[in-house]
Length: 100
Image 1: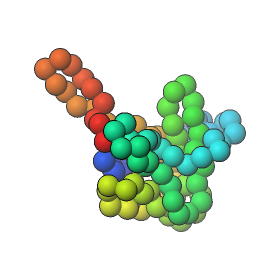
Image 2: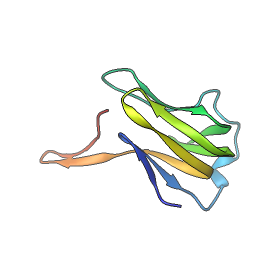
Image 3: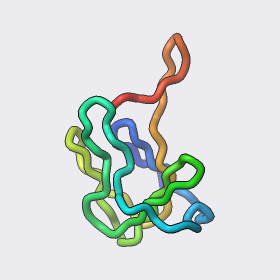
Image 4: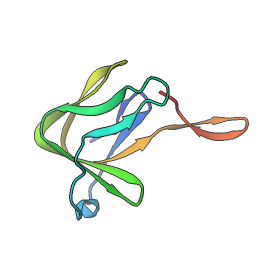
């Protein structure tokens, strides 16, 4: 599987599942927009979201899940385990997170 991107959120496929030892979070929001308050969230399908040492991990249990955001096209995520990252970009002053 290849990484999947929606706006400033990128999902990186995982081959190990050691990040899923704790209980899942009680929401499926991967990121919230800093300016608009819109959310990158799983809106369809069965999935669980975990947090470990400041990083989110997504486990898609159904054959697919839908990642939605008000300003981006819906993205289909296949079943599997994913690390959730916020993309960064370089500016003359250094690296910064991409604002959505």
